[in-house]
Image (cartoon, rainbow, N blue to C red):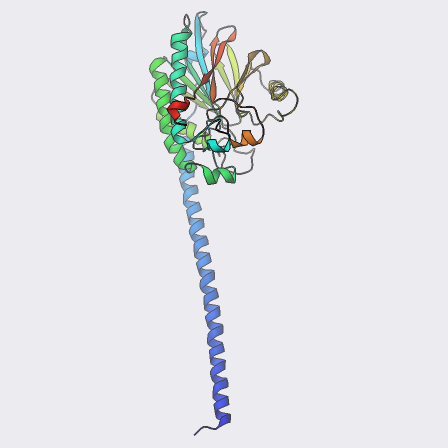
Length: 358
C-alpha cells in the first residue's frame, strides 16, 4: 500500500502532466486562432486579387477605344441651324434622402431617381421640339458632368446607399442607355462628352493621378460607349483627365465637374470662385464657356463665361445642416447657334411630388 510520500510524488507528477497538457492546449488554441486569422487574411487577399483582375480586364478592354470627332459638330454651320445642349450631372444615383430629416423638402431613392431621369430626357425633347421652333437642330450634345453615383467616399454614404457601387453601375447603365436611345430617336445625332466627378472615385481621399480611370463615372461612360459602337448617330468623348474641350459648331466649351473651384460660402456666394476658375482655366486653354456642376446651384451665366448645372437629387441632409439655400431638382438646357454661342437657356425641373408619392 503506497505511503503518503508516494502519493504526494504521484500527485505532483500528475499535476505537472496536467499543467503540460494545459500549456500545450493553450499553444494549440493560439496556433489555431493564428491559422484562422491567416486563413481569413488569405481569403481577403484572394478576393481583392480576384476583384483587381476583373477590374483590370474590364478597364483594359474599355480603355481601348479611341475618340473620333463627329463631322456634324465641326463642319461649317448654317445660320439657321442650332444644336441642343444639356448637361446631366450630380444625379447621385442610389443615394437615399429621407424627407423627415430635411423638414419634408425633398425625398430621393432609386425609384424616384428613375422617374426624374425619365422626366429629364422627355423634357429635353418636349422643350426643344414643341416650344423652341424655327431652328433646324443639327443634333443634341448631352454633357455628362460627373457625380453620377452617390459612391462610397464617405462612410455614411456606404452605410445608407441603396446598393453597392458595382450593382449601381449595372442598373443605371440600363436607364441612361434608354434615355440616350430616346434622344437618338428625335435628333439626327447625339454626341456625349464625359468627365468624372468626385463622388465616383474609388478612394476616400481625392487623388490627382488616374483621376478619371479610377472613377466609376469613367467606367459608366466607357460602358455606355461600348453599347453604342456601330451606331453612327451616337458618339462619345470620354475624358482621360479632369477637363474636356468640346467644339459645338463654332463655339468652344470646357467641360469639367467643378470640384476644382475653391470657396463659395462668403460674400457673393459661388460667383467669385467660378469667375476666378474661368480666368485660371483660360490661362491654359482657350474656350468660350465653362460647363460644370458640383455645387447643385443652377446658374446660367454665359456673359460671365460659365454654365453651372443643378442636381437631379436636389436638397439633402448635407445642404440642410449646412444652411444652404433650397433648390428644386433641376438640370440645365440651352441652344447653341453659330456666331453667337448660347442663344437661349432654361432649367429642366424634374420633380413631380404626387407621382413620386411623397
